[in-house]
Length: 197
Image (cartoon, rainbow, N blue to C red; front, side, top):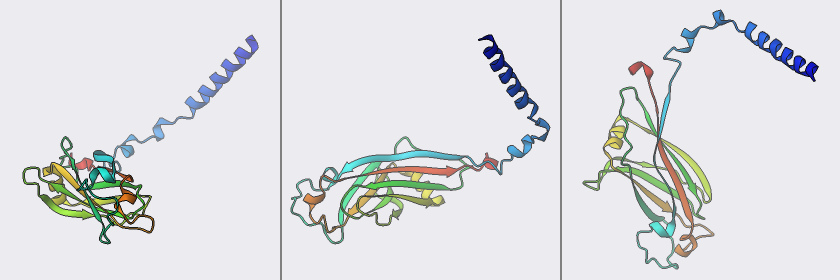
């Protein structure tokens, strides 16, 4: 037993001496690692997320199951609060709004996104449109916000999303889609320019 213990401790000592003797700190140039041009940290922050059934956000809750989904799409407006999420820095040059959408309905879907002012209820700035998301599919959409969009995002207290569902071969009436759901996650991403800090 003592022989095994001595063998293991001898092996550990040999391994440690090899590791320590192979490290050459004079070849390690720390200045190359801390060059601010090479390091670009990113800031991510969530804005809104949720999962919703169609029947919970349809504008008219008394909609009959037999109502046909219009060819131009069925509008499902949704307003979510943005309170508590702000950002401001001279080191942030660009901001990207990232949306993850999971369409668990049997219909194609599209949405647009805008920022709202709570005192007027009106949109601030431009409306950000999406592409069509296939039935029972997921999509990842990135909106690049220019300086005006960033200011509008700062001023806004609410985010309005208008989802639109289109009829399909398997779903042509409200009754076909009312218990279907979809989910979304909106966040912003901003690379930080360390030279401006």
